[in-house]
Amino acid sequence: MMDGYTRCCGLIGCPVEHTLSPVIHNFLAGEKKENLVYVPFHVSEGLVGDAVKGAYALNILGCNVTVPYKSEVLPYLKELDPLAARIGAVNTLVRTEGGFKGYNTDMPGLYRAMLEDAVAIRDEQVIILGAGGVARAVAFLMVEKGASRVVILNRTVQKAHMIAEEVNSFCGRKIAEAKPLTQYHELEGNGRFLTIQATSVGMYPYEDSVVMEEEAFYNLVHTGYDLIFNPSCTRFMRLTMEHGGRAFNGAKMLLYQGIIAYELWTGKKIEQDLAEVTFQKMLAAM
Ligand code: ATR
Image (cartoon, rainbow, N blue to C red; front, top):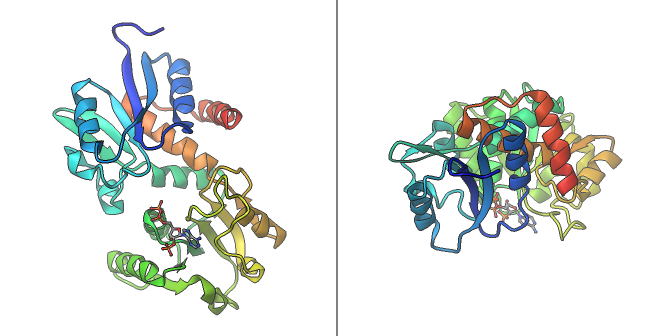
């Protein structure tokens, strides 16, 4: 029941029509008996600054931010959480005195998902496929959580080099390296890798595509973690499993980025039981 006290949260993006976030947040609000609604806000190109200002004026409690505004939103925030500043992308805005504070819950969300899936990072050698904004954030998460080696493979190798340099200068030693996708065979003879698929290749409706076509690559993969959640089993995941690896999709990352955002907005902790039920609701809505 909405009344005069109902608080509003929402999603700023373009497009927002296929989002699962309303399912997550409205379900959590119902279960936690929080007088809160969550709605999608389709924000057209060039209007993200107006959207943030307007959201503040409307007393909106918080927002998620999605494609293509995760970086574009930065100048319109009053404050930035240090992790979001380092990643250079924000997916959650939290109302504070005088403006919104920006956070990134995608990476903590991925970390929580990997913990739950029993995917270790510490002392692991890691391959990251892709060198966009998401891959960059993943590279920082991997070194922060103790990966022993991070190899960034990308079609455009210069972009992978830029991330590797940034990561190495952050760590003060050479943990990260870059290679073109085609040179993966240089990694042979070094054991198997945790491999994170951080490109959009293979996402619905292009589920027949995969960023790495060469089957021999998958002999290098002991665990394939695809950040794509639709389809639930990507071609990358299938190829990983066909070569004896474990494979996971990005659905739990989506769940936990939402749960962490909800905790930031309401100050309430979401218990593990409730997280699991919310996950089932989310899957049913896919
Ligand atoms: P995001 O910020 O969401 O990570 P992005 O910056 O568009 O998105 O990055 C997409 C990644 O997917 C890039 O690494 C891109 O490779 P390039 O740097 O060479 O462009 C990769 N990518 C997208 N389409 C691809 C394709 N068909 N084959 C190989 N890599 C692809």
